[in-house]
Each structure stands twice: as C-alpha cells, then as structure tokens.
Length: 459
Image (tube, rainbow, N blue to C red; front, top):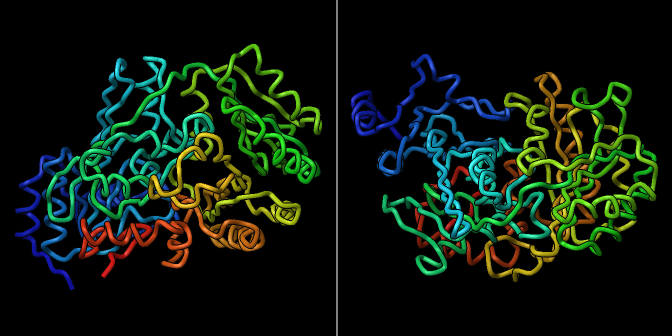
C-alpha cells in the first residue's frame, strides 16, 4: 500500500504554486465534490495546480509514492473518474487561460476551462469550435473522449479540430503533440481519453459561427414512432448547416410553460447554421410530420444555445447514464424506445445526437475515435437532485439501454459511459483498440494514468 507521511506532504505542498488540500483542511469537502453528486470519494490529497510546473510536480509525487492518481479538469465527468479514494487528485480547475488568434483562427485553451469559457473568448471574434451541448462541460474530458455537439455535422468531432496539445507524461516530461511532433501520441489523444498523460494546453481550429437559429420543438409522446421514423430519413439528407438532435423527455419546470410541465414528449433540439431567412423552410417539415406541442426556435448568439440548459443541470444532481453508438434506426429499435414511458424523474431523458456528414469525412483510422461509421450517439440519462432517487434513475437507464443495445454498433462514445469494464472499452474503440494499447505502452507503460476509461498497456 502506498504511504505518505506529513513531512513528505508538506515538502510536496511547498513545491506548488497552487494549493495542496488534505482531509483535515476546511475546504476539503468542497474541493473533493464533483458535478455528479452520486460520486462520493475521499482522496488522500488534492493538488490544485496553478501552472505546468505544478502538474509536473504532482505527476512525479503520485508516481514516486505509488498513489492512485486521478486527473480532474473543469467539468462534469459523470462516471466519477476524475477523483479517487485514498489517492491523489491532480486538479486542473484553476488553469483557465484562453487565448484566441483571430487571424490564424485558432484558440489556445488551458485544461481547467469549460466550454463556456471558450465560447466567451471566441465569440468576440465571431468564431467557435466544436464542443458539446452544455457550456459547463469541461474542455479536457470532452475533447479527449472525442467530443460531439451542435457543430459536428458541419465541422466534425472536437478532436477533428484539435491541432496540438501540450502533455505532461508519466515520466514527468512535457511534450507537444501534433501531426508533426509525437504524432502517435497525438493520434491517441484524439479520442483515447486521459490514458496517455495530463494535457496542460489544447489548441483548436476555429470556424466562423456567430448567430444560429436554435431551440427546442416538442411533439406529444404518442408521435414518437412516426417522428423518429421521419427523422431517420429526413436528417441524413439535409446539408451540414442543419443540426437537430432527437430527444425524449418528461418536461421539467422552468424555463418551459406550466401547461406542459410533467408531460412526456419527444422532439428536436435545433441548431441551424445557415442563412436566417431560410430557417423556416428547414423547420417546417418537422411541423408537418406531427403538430408540435411546444416550439421555441429563434435566432440567438451561439453561446446562448450552448448555455441554454445550464440552469436545468447544475452541479450537485445525481446522474447515471448509459450510451451507445448507433448505425441505423431500425423499426425494431424505435419500438424499444417506448420504454422511456417508465422514466422516474423529470430531468431524465434520452438524446440521439447525429454524428454524420463531416464526422464521416474522416477515416476510421485517422484518430482513436472508434466507429466512424456510426450515424448517431445515443445516451440514456437518469438525473435527479434527490439522492433517494439514485436507485430509480440507475435502474431506469440500465433497463432502457439493455432494451435498445442489441440494435446498436455495440460500443459507446466513451464520455457516455460509467465505469463499465474492459469489454465495453474494447468494443467502443473497435479496430483502434490494439494500436491504443501499443501507444499506451510507449508513453505510460506502468499505467499510472488508469483512473479513466482505462486502456491497459500492451505487453
């Protein structure tokens, strides 16, 4: 068992510009708390880093003292793999610098940033890069897992827009990974998760994105079958400017009208990137297939759609999710979505995110992301603020997923996985898994970075 005495911890703390937080410290409980309140872990020590030198020192301390070491960035990590019991948490949440180069159309982002931090900086120049659908999501975790969101049909996955990264390796070296430097590591970072080192800076390509036409459209739940069948035919035929993910939800409280609170609905969440005066022509077919129960789709700044649901999902809720990648929405699979009716809490739902067009323009072996042939990324998400409902949301998400899983690719977007074991990780990376193991053996042969969706080193 790894041991550390008070003197060693004090010496370690003296090397940091940031804070060293221990269980006896007043701020410990706040520091150990993560976005998903279902996760309740007690690290031995938390190193809240201020800069790259702190990260190098923390990696060395964890390695040299045999401590299980978790890396925490700035966002969600629903699976709870950003913390650890009786080990070291390297906390990057204070490293939040963002620097935009508007001429090169790139942005340099530190690992503690959320996508809201990035959007704030880039929107001033009418630019954006591919992120998720909630602005409180962390840049580090979403990127390293692959990343998809409102811009994906036009601009690909987040990793398709990553042009470089600074990485602290398990041996303490700082390297830059790109197409020209440590190209094998760069390949692995693009979808391989936090297995290969601690990323201390990301550089992304930016695209002109300013005002979008966005918002939700809900149909009554009894229109589920006909609207999902329509969606599977309609969306793939649309140009890349058209993005809409399919959802099934119970309508929660604010910001929705009181008249539909508690209603089970299906619908679309729009983000149209094309000319504003053509948006009505894009949306009208959704009104024609079934009469909407509710609609609020308007022009808005891109950061507004990114942050639209931040208030609905604050830190401190209990979360359990299951995901899968989907190639085709068969009639049999659509029928299984009727199981949503058993949903136990208003914040729980199913989202079906399109990952076609620009995502499919990248070959399956160009990045670590598995299953480029998939058309959708699906998530069953159980959410509730009441810890007494934790079992109910977990059972619902699992049983719903088990019903639909036989109709999927078999693997998942790794950011939509809980701690599910090697078989699921292997299935999610598919043909890229063995290459990832070889690269892991090169950069982290002792598997120091294993508190993640872990890829064990080859050999």
